[in-house]
Image 1 (cartoon, rainbow, N blue to C red):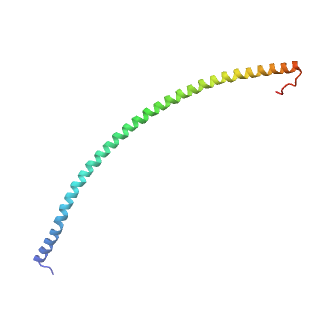
Image 2: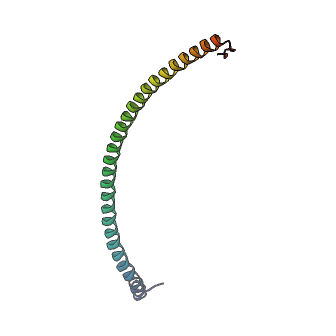
Image 3: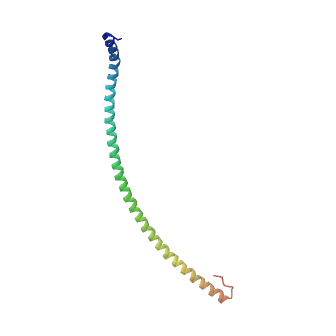
Length: 114
């Protein structure tokens, strides 16, 4: 059976071992507090970055939409001009074919098949 002095000696040994651990734990808690502060700062910066990125995304979406609208208007304009050009040359081609057929017929040449 352990005497009071044995228990005190055991207690002193345990205290001697625990004191450095407690000191290290205190140091660890201080470092954790500092880390948490830095982490909060990073989170704040990330939130700010996300807000700015969202703003940029909104602006880009508007600009792309505007550019799409301008491009579509340009394509419609080009389509109209191409239709006019194609119709013009189509009529010219038909007129030339008719004239060529009349000339061939007048000269007695074999007409081109259409």
